[in-house]
Amino acid sequence: MDNLKARYNKSPLRGDIYSLSELKIILDDVVRDFMENVKNSKQSKVSTDIKIVIGLISTAIALVVAYLSTTSEFEHHRNIIAPLTLFYFIINLLGEIYFRYVGSSMVFEDRVVSTNISAPDPTYVLLVYNKNKLIPSKYTKSVFDLFDSNGRLVHEEFLDDLQGLFEK
Image (cartoon, rainbow, N blue to C red):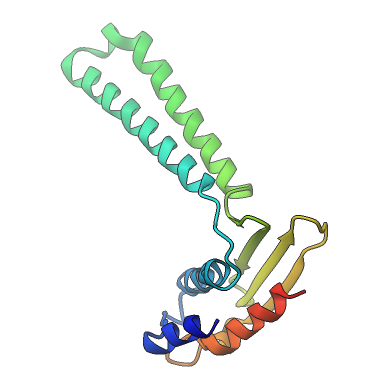
């Protein structure tokens, strides 16, 4: 953990204190670094792989539809373009549903970490689901306590909090 603190001392993490999504991304990156460097737990790449596959399939469908629509009339290729467009819609809808409910968590070898910041109350909520426990460990802290007035992350305190949370 000392090398992680030294790295953040050397190049402090800063964010716009008026952008909760930016602050959440910074905090999530610190959690990911902590899990990989301190806990030696690698993150699962399944969500990334699913995004890549959906993107490649969507691009291929869009290229075929664009090619067919520019080379001839729609009436000639209606039987091909309509199902391709429907398949494009379905695959992207299923991807959106997956990432809305399942893919937003960080999945590691022995834990699942889910984070959230809500707009009315800028509190960072971190839930840690261990593989052998049903009830998650919970960490909550105001973003005003995690970042100073210039938007610099108070990383020493946050890393110590993470160490305490993951030792539970």
